[in-house]
Image (tube, rainbow, N blue to C red):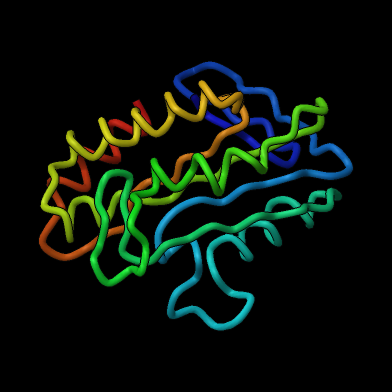
Length: 173
């Protein structure tokens, strides 16, 4: 599923995808690893901050973001140095699902993880895609609308190019 925010129509596979005009206010939950949280970025320059600024605010909407990022964690991987005893799929039950409101207003879910499953956890790209699918199915069961979900592909990382390509291909399939 392709999601277009902010009023810009695009063409994918020969099919025109209509833009989704931004409502006056958006609730956005970001969930992922250190990239989501902006580790090593300057203050206000993390992934979630930049996305809110570039896509939402500049398009005439205000945003109420929730950012939940656990450095080192994956969809299925638990990094011993993260300080957390749960992976992202388990974490979402207590930290992400409660941010979903049932009042009919726009709730968006932005996901960015998978690198740690592959790099630190030793999972293959296909296994990591399956972990993401488990995460997604749990969010659907919790009431999230997958038409209002953005899944970001894995960034380049030395030594895992083939696994990255497999994982990213599964996301965009």
